[in-house]
Image (tube, rainbow, N blue to C red; front, side, top):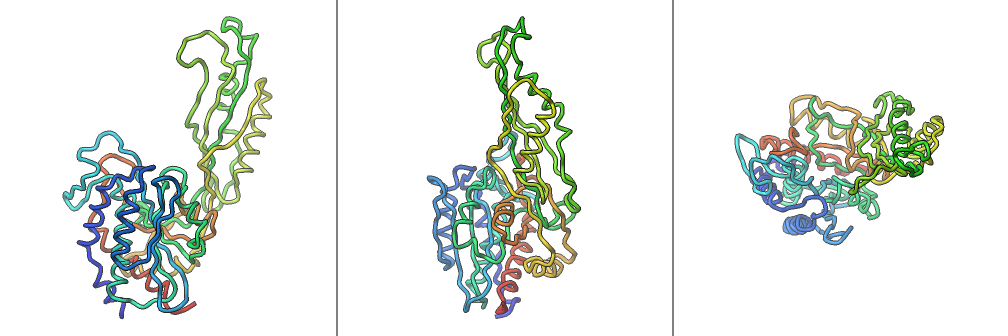
Length: 391
């Protein structure tokens, strides 16, 4: 069975049908159960061995496996089943797929239900042709990528943590607008609490104003130390929440407590512990009167970096040139995906590849339909060549 016969079995109408089906299923983060059931049923109908792995009530991961003729490498194609919540401004029903001007609109259309539909198209072609391969070809649909990565973390506790590589069908088309990541930044979320002393607001000298003390930390965040990585450059920070002062009832009282949350991106070589110590040193240098506690809260992700010499990249690069007629773009990305868990924590080489992205995490999300077939073709060829009878 040749690669040409494998590619011939790819069916764009099947891909679009599956994509429209799964757009109709509400899988907003926290509500992934119905989509997992759909994927399990569809994959079983294709002949794959499937299982659900309940991470939280009504929030299962779905895993599916296709075994080769003999032992060999193991390749997993991954998608996250959750979407972001509906944002304001949609001109159509987010759960009713609408095809218009070569685009398919719907919540999760590009991030990342189109990628999942392309995976199923490639798996279907393998089954229908009986294309020979060694090892194991598998699928994982995981929950919670848009939140805390609970699904990916749960997957690392299973046998799929031993795969040789993972292809994440995230919307990274490999062009100049969205290059293929050779690594991602990590992140922590600082949770900083300031404990002052209450007093009458007309006599502030008798108290310790927690908001004003917190303000001194905020004003000096530019003094944090960031490692300069040769590929990523430096990380950054963004204050995303501040709390303090009276709540529902107005009162002229020196606020005795305040807190803030700060997102910080980490480059390889920085860790949560080094970042925590960095913040503690900054606070100590300010000689504040209030008590300050520096902690972190979820989510937290490890930075990772990959070499172009990884087999999955070596397989992918010429396939991209064959299918797309051009050289893929690569980058070291300031972003977070489940690859931070699979590669950053699990040490599994990861390739991001999926249909073109223009409007993820926005109203009127869509995928360009012409991207579905070449993405499916690249998935099929990557699987065929990665799982050739060589070890």
